[in-house]
Image 1 (cartoon, rainbow, N blue to C red):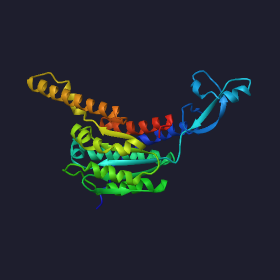
Image 2: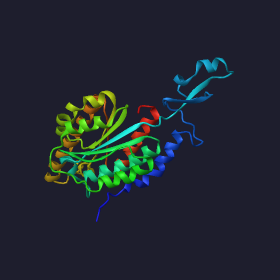
Image 3: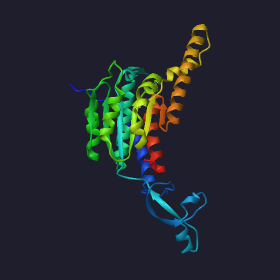
Image 4: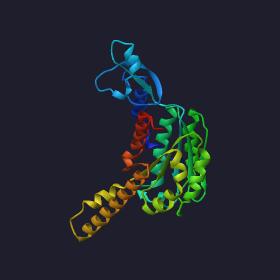
Length: 279
């Protein structure tokens, strides 16, 4: 019997698809964001970005007109799941890898419906799964079947292999989403030193699920044991915050959220990138 990964975040897909339709101009809500594909001209209304004013069109018109843009389509999204040591840690009642798979499925469903090409890599010391160049209707079934036999491995991931395989999958400028943990040693000593060839040409997002138990521990003050636990939780939070800031300073985006908000937070970040034309 084959055990398929659950897709609990599927419930968030309709609302994100509705937001995507708004960006794509298929509803009555007019998108005023800055994409890269010119759509048409319309009359200026208060609140429009003055940088969108088309001065030539305005000169030919009796009113001020602005350019409107459509979000880019046919972009490339590469989702990389780290299935090494840090993915084995349990967050809530599931391994971190399960939360990463759930978020990857929501992002894949959304991006493929947005007209983008979505690929998948699952890597630790070896490549555990690879899904490339699937048609829109085939993306989710292919992702689910590729994830089914994968389990977290209790060994350190080979980040050089991860980067090498990612580079082999990307040619045009791409969005590379790495689902891992904000483990300072694994990221700052393992991934970041070898990531330069990817971040020079591509938009890179580091996504990690946070553990709500750490926040609960940080609030404990009932006895000496809880105070020590709170101190440890505060230290861990500070370390993760410093790691996230270091990644941000390097030009990477960081998405971190507890399990119930992790998948939709990553989907929202994708939509924000789409809206701003930064894919």
